[in-house]
Image (cartoon, rainbow, N blue to C red; front, side):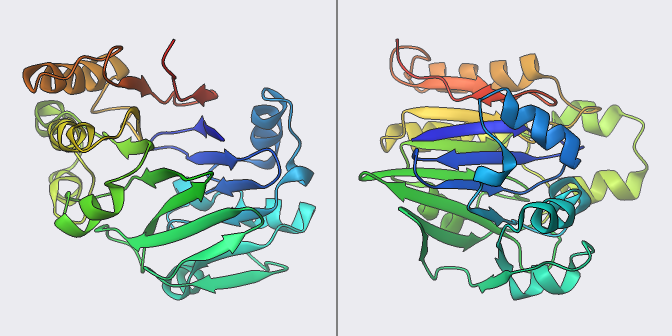
Length: 259
């Protein structure tokens, strides 16, 4: 199973899930040209995609969704609320999904789950293949028990680690935007992500990728160290007990595996 971040950050997001037979793209917050370049880097082409799943309608997740769906006739899956709010133009084939109602795309099982974010019916996704579970959970205002329950049992997780709280509070963002990001329907901070990682690692998850980092209010180094320090304090060693990767903003990132 391949679990690959094509791009990840506050300016664009796209993730590839593939078992070699079924290829699923989660979000397309990039141009068609950029998507083609990213897929070429892993020896794929957009016409090999079997489905495009959308987490929510914000532009950093759907910028290229309509173009890609039309150009390559890719079926799109999203909640009713997301479809109603997307501004992507005509989509040749759309499929309405519901949180907590599983379905299959080819050989991969999919479970969407609600996430606390200021969008219209947003979701995260868990994927199932060969008795393994892979989960994408970004744009989370807070780590609720419900979301944590959906993450638990995953072998690999792409988890939001959006901002350093002090950088955000001291930064140049307007006060209303700061309040939105810090709200319970905004974005997950490094500290909250680190706390969740500890709990998930203790419950058996072995592979973590931190994603959706803010360009202005975070750095890959700060996000990584926040998580590593928290894990170390919990007696969990990166490299020995779990793997930890930070998704690059504008480049393909593979989730690390044990050497």
